[in-house]
Length: 163
Image (cartoon, rainbow, N blue to C red; front, side, top):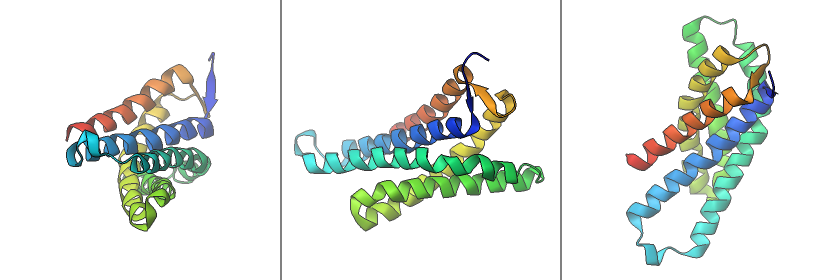
């Protein structure tokens, strides 16, 4: 391997990507469908930008717990492991969403927690499958990891923007 990254760093990068880009896509969709371009308040955009950035940073910071959680469930049977992966992804996404949603007051934190949980529940099992197939020990080559992480993240963003 020429540029390996460990599990913690890989999941931290994924948490940063999945925590910041889909919220921006969701905000773009909401703004595009509900507000005329000349009526968007600047303060509203600043709050949404801050929420997206903080959600990404929360996803990055809370990713340190994911490898140990994945290690604990590695000996479970496949159906149980898939259910637990979904639950871990939901918890990770919900925590990141709630932290970022605090910029949008209490209602924003609740909504962001639910949306973040759904995003995490869908994307974490997909990442684990690809990551497990390509890793060597506790490391993965960054040139293999980045296309997977960006592919998952940008596919989700395109789904959000096209629905």
